[in-house]
Length: 119
Ligand SMILES: [Zn+2]
Image 1 (spheres, protein in one colour):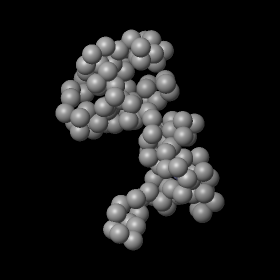
Image 2 (cartoon, protein in one colour; image 1 turned 180 degrees about the horizontal axis):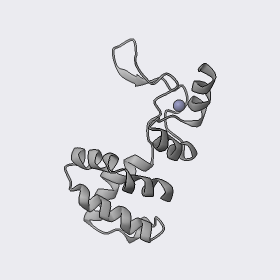
Image 3 (cartoon, helix red, strand yellow; image 1 turned 60 degrees about the horizontal axis):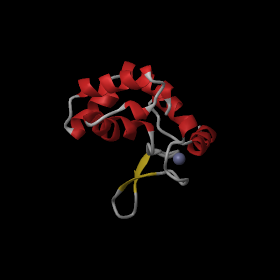
């Protein structure tokens, strides 16, 4: 559990609010769960019932397997699909994720490096 990111999500409410809206749940409850997790050093073992649903559908997608946009951002492929230009595994690694939130720029470590070279 990346506690730094939980703290960030608590202060920057738009991420949770968007996810809660998509999951059709009350974002206020999601924020309550983040506070509970922070008070327990990120231990998801303290969550019960509906709290687990919030965690799985609202909070976890913001912490794990976040899509890397790639060095050139999202692009059309030959079939007209909107895809990431990431040539790696397409997932922002844990180390890069907090930085990605701070910069509002979601890239894995390798794409971040590539994008810097292209500048
Ligand atoms: Zn990438």
